[in-house]
Amino acid sequence: MSTYPAIGDRITGPAIAGTMAITEPLLRSGAGASAIRAGIEYEAFVRDQQQRCSTVLSLATGRQTERQRWARSERAHRQRLAPDRPMATSGRPHVFWHGLDRVGMHERPLVVLVNGWTASGLLWPASFVERLEGSFDVVRVDNRGCGYSRTAPAPFTMAQLADDLRDVLRAIGARSATIVGLSMGGMIAQEVAIRHPEMVERLVLCGTRPPPPAGFAPPRSVLDAMMATPGKRENRGAFFERTWGAVVGSDFREQHRDGMHELIDRLRERPTPRAGVINQLRAIASWSGVSRLARITAPTVVLHGSDDPLVPVGNGMRLAQLIPDATYVELPGVGHLVPFEAPTALLAAIGRPTTV
Image 1: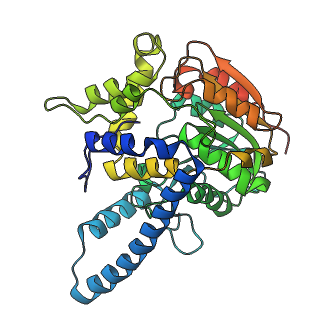
Image 2: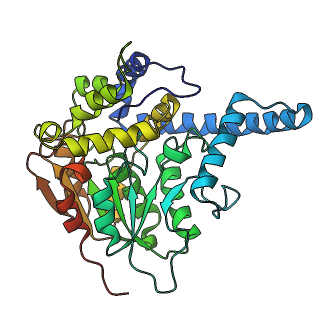
Image 3: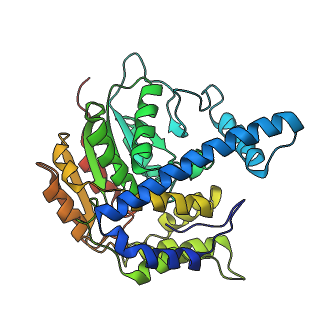
């Protein structure tokens, strides 16, 4: 999804689009994904070494780098939102989540909402979350790079994003949950079901795709639009409406103005920095292993809008074929943002809670 520049941005939309054009052949193969993943892991190793050195230097000199000052500010924001929640330490989640800090003595079934590329846990419709909370405990995760996880360690792989979800479930004392994933969040959900099957009761996958080479890419024009940067005199609201409005169904943008306004307000509240866009995109590009989908044992529902321009509908069809016994539901006239465009269908796919 599209973003607005924030602290530390140095990479432009055209530069990202150019990089994607060069790497596009790699993204269609497992070998290409493995090469990108190896690069991420090497860069993460270098990052860790540099951070150790900068920490020692800052302690010795009393001076903080811009990144350290930004991270300190981010931690302060997180503590204001969840004052009793421990910050990321050894064995604690690197990511922030919205919702309960601990499951109760008489716990209700748990639903974890995992959003897509550049979209934080803030970007779920309020009315949808409210209706869901009538029957379930609900947790909304900010993936690394966005929301209140903007300064989580980066770069990262899809496996690490999946492990972040595992760590959140452990931190709140949950044994398992229904995982609802949209777009990139659906890829993370698949990875959780493969890596940590005991923690997944059910999977609900919306507007997402299988690992390459099984999926289908969107038109280049759609990617270019999503990588756009604001015009010289374009305000945030107009920019977000132009870019995010391009991925919804043809009727939603004009007929559901309240939904578009809510989406734009949430985007303005916590914009994703350009570095987060790049790092999440790299995680997507490093994802592979389509044969592993056969290991998924959790009951799975695949929802896909027939008019999804960002993740073409063939991806949902193919995904339902690859996951054993998955149910496929196609949503006529719906684009990419299933929770905003078809919340009732999504609630039905999540289903009624089972008795605990």
